Image 1 (tube, rainbow, N blue to C red):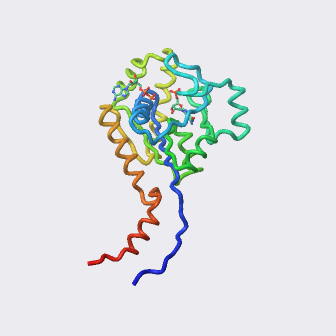
Image 2: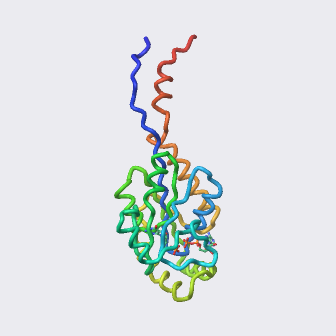
Image 3: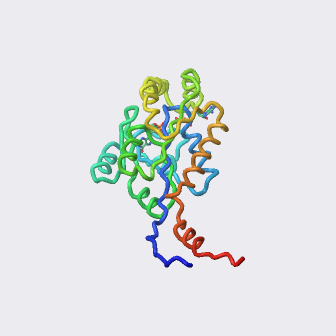
Length: 220
Ligand code: ADP
Ligand code: 5GP
């Protein structure tokens, strides 16, 4: 006998909020960039910051660079989903692009620190998947900061001094990755994204699929 037709409420898929944090120099931006290049179904949340632009950075691509006054105006008008002071500068996530992406079911990547990760977790826990990236050694962390060659020695020293406190937050994340070999670390991130997209509550269309599956009566 065919089951009575029910009309389950269609819950549209919401986007995934993939948060990546690490101490400065551990390689999260490199991993994030590789993910954005290889996975066309995820977009970057471009933060606002009061930090000085690095030589390799492009306004609107890596960050929206703002004065402290402009940043405060955005923060005080509730235009930021989260914000924090990191290494002596302000950073924040513009609210509007994130809310739009989530409503449209598009996935978004956030390269933000532990304070931002905590705020997103509090506000949008069902959508957040978080990854903490660790360096293989503190010596390697230091040499990566030098090899990147984009910050002054003073800035590098501040970041190194802050790194131990940042690492202390690793257990607040869903996943932890040691970025020793970049390909291995990137494979792990891809596996996480793939599995998280397969979670039952992110499978848009499953209600219809299962209903039709159960309505089918094999002829033989
Ligand atoms: P973060 O965004 O965490 O501050 P970056 O992604 O800018 O760090 O990486 C810091 C430096 O380390 C860059 O020069 C990058 O090319 C390099 N790097 C990243 N991952 C690795 C790795 N697995 N092995 C060697 N160098 C790496
Ligand atoms: P950097 O100056 O190296 O680009 O970033 C410094 C730190 O600020 C990194 O830990 C980075 O993840 C974090 N960060 C970047 N954008 C944001 C943001 O919008 N919010 C928060 N909370 N942290 C951010």
